Length: 221
Image 1 (cartoon, rainbow, N blue to C red):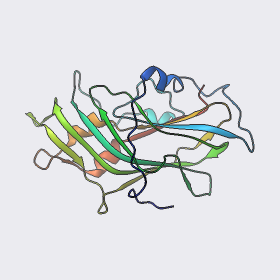
Image 2: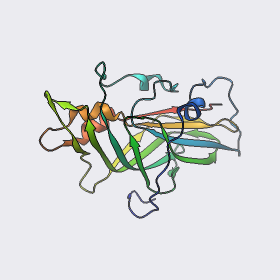
Image 3: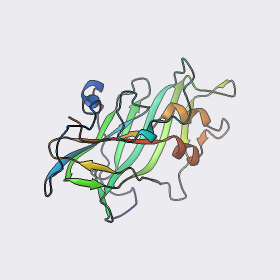
Image 4: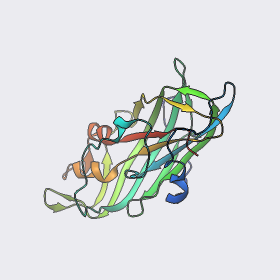
């Protein structure tokens, strides 16, 4: 499996309404679907510019916040991301969920989640999700204040020397037949934007990695 972000069909996706996108996320695991040997189940990957407050996480430890938004904090702008997503069976290789690189553009002013992948996987247990980023930047238009000074323009997250970032989350989950599994990539953009260097307009990749959150709702209906 290539771990590079170049070369496979860039494709923008469109926002999906919160009511539709989160209907599958608000139901707890108990009583939903069955794991069937040899069957298939649907996996959906969504990306949100900020936290999905009504998401029910299958892993309680993921519900802890890293930093908090100040009351009334409202940063306006446009987030642009290049992303790929993969899942791994125990002891196996990573299997791609996305159809190559997904080029995502979403407004921070209307933080609706965007579907970036929907596919069928064999039912059973998966042990990890890998997310590749090839671009993370925000065009800030208003609302960002750093050290008491308003800041606007392009803010870029520094990636590695090759211009990529790989984040592996070892949250185990089950794929169920007849009950979708939803993987949510919560960018938490308005949190790491506040850590930008006011001179360079760049955010350290360590800060982004610390704040980025992946949550999974398995067996939702």
